[in-house]
Length: 161
Image 1 (cartoon, rainbow, N blue to C red):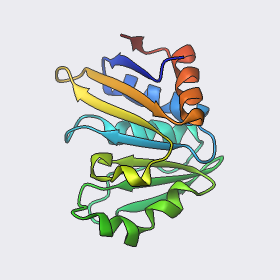
Image 2: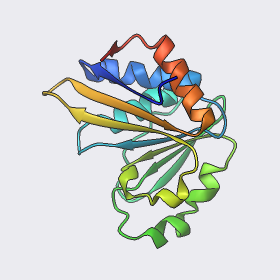
Image 3: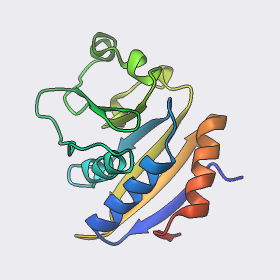
Image 4: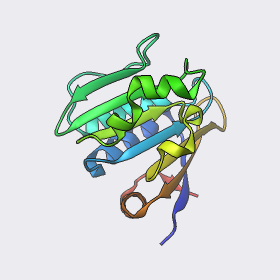
């Protein structure tokens, strides 16, 4: 079983649709870490995850709020760490509490998270190929997330690389 795979999304709609698949496959305790430059599609994918979880609200990239909770078939903890400058801020935020909660935790700008917080996770890197297309690389750490990734590989409708 591979613990990484890559897909190409040709549009924001495909990125959103892949997010929906993630949300539908998610289980309590799943942690999704997203990295990518501004405009790479992290929030678009998070919105798809929320839809897949049955969340009525549409998550946004918060300007000053680092954590927002949404309710669907399970809680979605959406964290945006763009403004984080020091690891101490993550402790104040209660990052470990979100990650050990009864919902799914999605962290945008996860490259600002020290690995000490991450015992098991699904890392997603979004890289622009052109104005619309994105290379989405997924890497799993921990048994649950490796199984999560295998399920996504088997069921995704987005072009695999």
